[in-house]
Image (cartoon, rainbow, N blue to C red; front, side, top):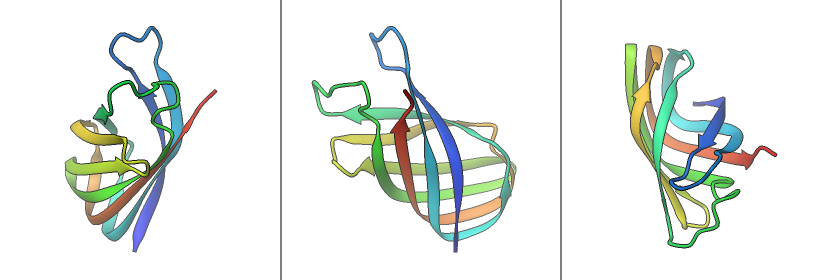
Length: 114
């Protein structure tokens, strides 16, 4: 069981003039029962020093995921990139609504929008 959703991402790095935009998907494998509406997640990005920022988030990430929504939802995901140079950690979830319970493995694929 699982689910898949399209996503858009805006990466705003400290000291950069303009943000980098990404598109992609988030897939979940495991228990995923219910429905949710559009949500917004704010992630902290952890990278090795001197990582080139343009296109840096492009790639595949995976990790554990847990979510609960009954009206307004809560969730947690900790994702590490395939190159193990960048990790994504959610710090805030806004606006996830619906009725849903999900526990399992999440994977995110991001592509730089040109």
